[in-house]
Image (cartoon, rainbow, N blue to C red; front, side, top):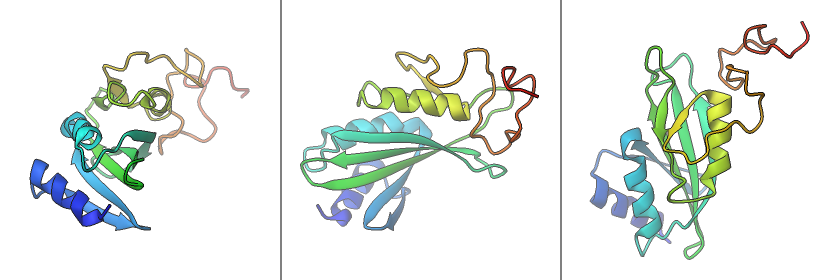
Length: 163
């Protein structure tokens, strides 16, 4: 599949304000966080594109930049042998954890990826079917992959680590 076709289809559907980047023959598109579900449904269901596999979801902390967080979705079209990366920046709201809609209803493979990202970065995936922790103890309130997390941990955040 031609990368220009992907860009044209997305621009036609979602408007000319999308941010595209091509690196290592992979296309990346920046999407508004509030439109992630619309993009994902379209990419999965549009007959020419058919991005039917989500291989991972990950978080990025751009601290101290604003918006601080970004969620990255790596998609693959088995039919077209094509990869696509979606990138959604999330505003960090004062006193609240950043949030974005879960894509588990579109691709079940998002389940554990979103849970790990939530745990490590403190990004809430709204409407996730099972938001329990995967890796850290339930009592931990820390998010160890955030750039401002102290390397040694703190007694409050990591009570089971030796001092």
